[in-house]
Image (cartoon, rainbow, N blue to C red; front, side, top):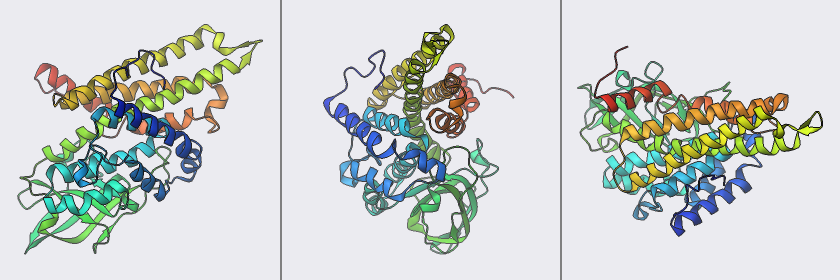
Length: 385
């Protein structure tokens, strides 16, 4: 692993072992195959099972519910390594753990936890998270999906879009407004009458993951499918904080691949009788990538320590997601430049990572939204448009 400032010194033995295991898994099972998946706009279902067997899915979930109960730093390292392979692969895994398993564990009933968490952790079933709508995006409070109380259950109507895993999901965490306009969470199984999940086609990013919609047409669920909490936007937003934490680590894995690929390429590509790594401007770009990776890794490492100590706040997560994804995207663009014309071919990994990071920079809160979150935390003032 590229760790110029030795940010990972002091890891516990278990964390080092987990990191080494996942890194080897990525090198053996993902790196040799991911370009084919990306070209085919797909991700094999069996990979999710493999990740479950390795303990990658929901690893911070307690062992009594099928998880591994590992540290937040170890989970961050898992995200790092998966995204070193591909952002889409990391997205599929982190949706399962942070956006599906986390709310079930944090907000669900004991029956819901026992029913779903062990199978999600093992990869026996796949989950998805339905919050984003076509007119929602950065304003989830404007959601139109409704949950109408009907007898001893609810009837759901509405649609969600840009939903990772939805076409192959067995269960969806769906957020909808109840009769009083309060956002509630529901566990909806995909075989429910009126539930469909059309695949999203023509993506030029995150192609090594399955993306789709969730369409709910008079989907009836029992009252026991609702999370037994008061309701409100704080619950889905709490899930996003967990996911953003993993992204802050994951983007640096993509940046490592761009950096190491560029180092290898520039040392072997010659012009005018010398490797281009000897050129001043190329060294400037390589130094920029290495510096931004090092700063980002130091931030992610500290964030993990704060999270494990119960001292992390959502604004810190926003800062880390905002910074680390943007520097990874800018680094990928520099890597593409250093590869010259070869950089636009998928023979090299940089264009794939660059295109993937365009999406990572946007989802789970755009760069601008995270700027406003941090700005409000610093000043105590809501910024005016």
